[in-house]
Amino acid sequence: MSSDAGVARRAGVLLVGGGLAATRTAQALRADGYDGSVILASEEHELPYDRPPLSKEMISAGAGPSRLLSDEDARAAGLEVRLGHRAVGLDLTARRVRFDGDLPDIGYERLVVATGARPRTLPVLAGAACARTLRTVEDSRWLRARFVPGAKVVVVGAGFVGLEVAATARGAGCEVDVVEAAASPLERAVGPELGGWLIERHRDQGVRVRCGVCVASWAPCGDGVQLELSDGAQLAADVVVVGVGITRDLSWLAGAGLDVHAGLTVDACGRTSDPAVFGVGDITCVHDADGVCTVTQHWTATTTQTGRVAATMLARPAPPTARDEGYVWSDQYDMKIQLVGAMAGAARLMDDSAEASRFLAEYYRGDRLVGAAAVNCPRDLLKRRLALRSGG
Image (cartoon, rainbow, N blue to C red):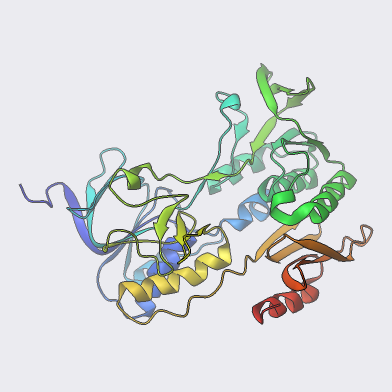
C-alpha cells in the first residue's frame, strides 16, 4: 500500500493551527519567495483572527473578529485554508497528519505546528452549562449575549484575561465577583505592587474581589448556579467565566516521537527533533545552551519568531535572534496597562496615583534595570523599554 493512501493531498508546507503564529509563518514564507503549496489547517470554523480583542471589544461592542487573513488575502497568496480540521495524530515516517472525525489525512514535505495553548478548565465546574472559558470567537459571542445589566457574573481567576472580562462585564452593567485562589493576585506575573494596585482599581469600579479562596462545589439555581467557595461563602451566578491559566495539547506530538517538555521543544529557529517539523508560537518552548527552558507566550515574541522559522525552513539566513522583551499589554476600564521585562527584584515606585489611574514602577536586580510596569504612561514605558534594549 502506498504511504499516501487515505491522504487528501500532500502539501509542500502544512501549517497546523489557525491563529497568529500559523498565519504569520505562512505569510513570511510567501514574502521570502516560497512558491510551493501551502495548506493551513485550523480546528476553528472561522478564518484566522487576532485573540486579544476577544475579552474586550468583541464582548463590549459586538465587534467582529479582527481578521489576520481574509479569503482575498488567502487567494492572493496562494494559501489553501482548511477549517474545522483538528489534528489528533502525526506519522513522522510517512509525513502525514491525522485529523479528527472522517477527515482524510494531509501529507507534507515540511510541517509547522502552531496549535497554541488552551484555557485550563476547572473539573469542579464540570457539567455547569453557564460556565465558560474564553478562547474563541464563539466564546466571546456567547458571553456578549449574557453580559446584560443586572446579570450576576462570577470570574474565577484574577489573571489578565479574568480581569479584562471582569472589567468588560462591569462596563455592561453586570454584578461582578472575582474569585482568586492566590492570596496576592497577579503577584507572580506583575509583582505585588502593581497587582495590589490593579485589584483596588477593580474594587473602585464595584467589583467584589475575593482572594485566597476557590470554588468548592456548585448546584443548579434557575438558569445559573449557586457556587460554594472553600471558605463556605455562597455566590449566585448567571454566568461563570473561568480564567485560571493555559495548557498545551502535546499528546499527539509526544505520541509521534517529537521531543516535548513544557511545550513542543524547539530551538531559536523553530527546529524540532525531526528535521521536517517546525514549531512556532504558544505551543513551543525553547531550550537555550544552558538548558534553560522558556515557553513562548507573548504576542510580540510570536511575531518575531515566525520570520526566523520561515527563513530557516527555506535554508536562508534567519533574522538575528532577538531577546524576548516580555512586552505585554492589557486594557481594563480606562487603563492601558503595559509591561516589559521582568517584574522581579526590587521595585521602585515612580507614580501610583489612584485618582488619575496612573502607575509607573521600575524593577531592579542590584543596580540593573530588568523591567518596568506602566498604566496610562505610554511614553514613560517606552523610555524604559529602550533602556532595557540598551542593557538597562
